[in-house]
Length: 454
Image (cartoon, rainbow, N blue to C red; front, side, top):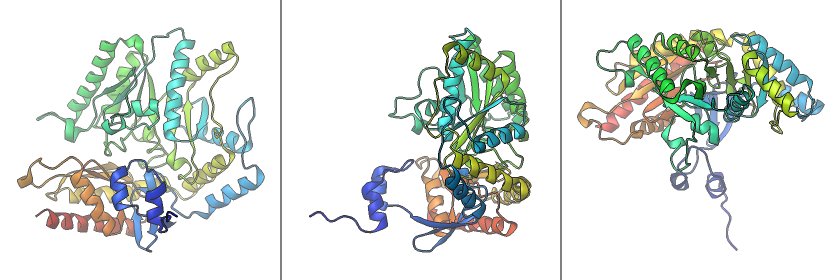
């Protein structure tokens, strides 16, 4: 009889296909198995403690063992563990959360639609945009413009809007009608002698030229993160959002703010749209909405978006879209309690204060010969790791970032490398001492990397 694997690591390799992982490499090295969490820390099965410098996947705002969220989930499970939102049905947590989100919105919004992940939300938004264009009698107005290195998810539609090659290669993506304009990363994309504002102007001009080339009457929407996350924590250059919004207004194109990472305090204000004075027509939210204690997401739309959708649904007799788990009562209850904690403990203010500390500490490390750029805002940041001069550009993209990540792990810090940028996005509850500890590990790890590259 065939022997079954018995260690947790071996069982994972035997039975579990991981996302964002090289399957063959995983067969060789196996997983790091995380056993428990406490505040900003997680512990592996060997008992080693790590600062979770990415808040899981940009998402655990209130830490890893918040009893109030556990209690909220348990209480809702006892009262109404599941119900749906089809056919005029609803429940208290969904109603309360929809109202709360509309009240919190940085601009006037009309309706909230609930989904289960950021990918699902953005996928649904594309469907709704197509539905709306048909309602308006503009069946040709269906294209959406995203940005190179933007990240909007992994479903067929949302991965198409994502502007990262590995989300397209061998998947036959992107689908037709999804375009990608200039990535607003001044450090990488700016030209010699070009000022930051001049670069922002060029980004807007590139967008304008793409719209004109495609035909303004064919472009329905532009989707973008206030600050790019998985594309390497790209902070927009000065005046970028002002100039981009002027172009969209000129051609009557909807603006979708993908706030999946930025919302609920990450940038030091409640929304990334507050930080950059963005006035979106649609906003996507997930991750920190429930601190990822429950899979849950939402998007808000304004009257300009909602009214034609409602009219078309009325003409057909139904809005033929929805998910079994949309507005799940447990997820909504957890989200409501999570938002209360963020407000009561002023975690947005903490993100601003501790974020300033983090950004200042990383800025000091920018002088290190292996650091090309330190960048970020609030409690989201990255260091771009570069090869020593004598080694030039011979290394494969991502090799240095992966090497840095391994050293972080050995020193008790979990980060994530996005090619050669290593990211930092700790829980919003992080303290001054914990930020100092994290910066100390980063500095120590850079010195280790220097020695290992000799």
